[in-house]
Image (cartoon, rainbow, N blue to C red; front, side, top):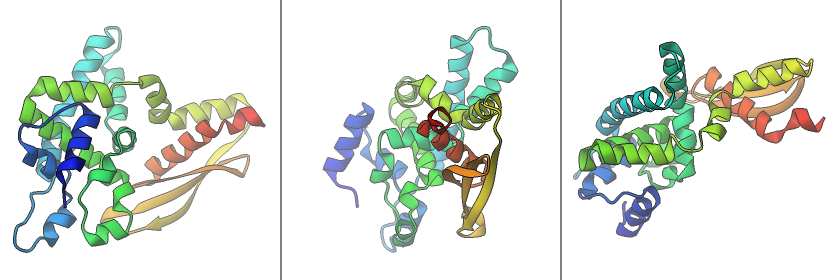
Length: 231
């Protein structure tokens, strides 16, 4: 259950104090938890996530339009998609340890839901939706500016990790490949684990809800390890 101190801590971390605390609580409540409450059911974050997704698309579209006047419509679309995709939002959510504040059901907790990209990226969008309802577009924009549009150079490394790694490997005259190690979980919520190999040797690994996002994670870990520079 929520306690006042943890909510205050999160509000301080994100730089926004809610007038309606119930919106923040809802944004942090997973359906697995609300479904466990037999008498007083908690509202979960799914509707707020829907709203937050739309707000984020508007804000990110405006960001690229205003800050990159020479960028084509196609490139803005590509950059926006990379910035607001599930792994990218999960990356941003981890910067503020958002997963620590989520209410999960016992089963979801036991299977590692707190660290799952699909959950914490949804919560990130739900928080955006909650701030928008509580404080309007300016406040929602301030949150997005601080935690999604900030440090773009480092985040770009993550967003484009597969492309960047491929270019580095080709420049070094080496071969890059990915191997699927496992698929775990139910059909609607699988977790894929992938290894990135350079010249047949394991250089990094990653996980995601599909093979593409798992490969992105693996490529990002290879880039952070500087394995190409160290050999």
